[in-house]
Image (cartoon, rainbow, N blue to C red; front, side):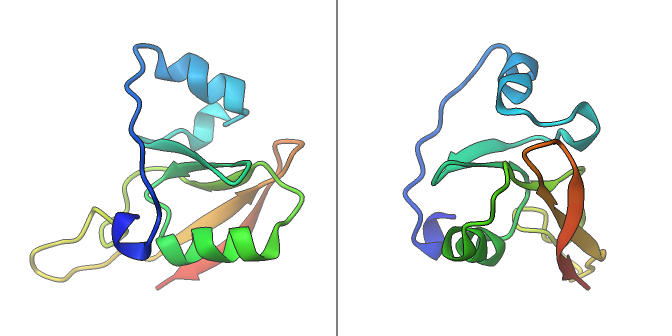
Length: 104
């Protein structure tokens, strides 16, 4: 995210489950990283380009989620160049999910 121009401030939390619940992240969508940017929540290894698009388009939503740790997603690059396809989802204010971006 820093490489994409975002200012990053890390905060350690002893109770990530409570934080995710407070932010409205469904348990099934929980991942290893949680962030807030521009009034939105980000969960998982969401690509910076998707975050930039989110901030540009400003949809009425909670944010973006990418559960799990797909090989080839940011921070999960493989030494052999392998990439798994993954879809980032838009998390609606009502907890609904819809595809936001597909990464082959």
